[in-house]
Image (cartoon, rainbow, N blue to C red; front, side, top):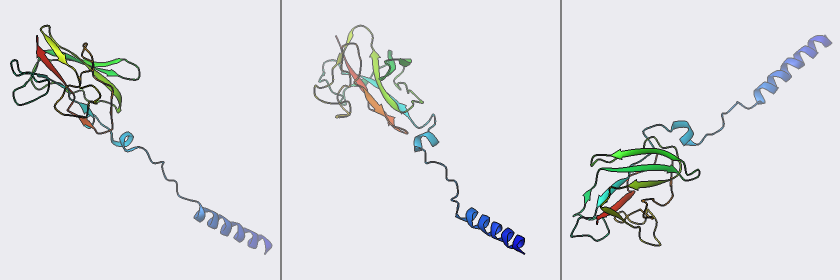
Length: 161
């Protein structure tokens, strides 16, 4: 009888223990790690020619999208060039997929043109109409891209010498 009582007590204790144990829940992961893919995060830079005779240093209706230049994407933490592209048409180039992180671009334009520099004291995202180039060598400022973000407003404005 004691044996049956002891066995029954052990079964009841096991049932109580197992029913109180919480169910396993996977740790919450950053949305980006779960669903990031090649189509969600990209950088689409462009070069605009400040129309000769109507140069004003900003993009306006008279300006045209430029082609025949190189653009390079750099990792801002390591200064490693991640990708380079030659832009031969007016549609530009999309760096895609781009992992979320910190980057900068370099535009390389043909001889006979120079860059319009970004307004001092402003950032790349202050205005959609000014240049984002900060050096004579065609480098932009450092920027961060988040998961699923699509940066389409980074541009270099150039003028004919």
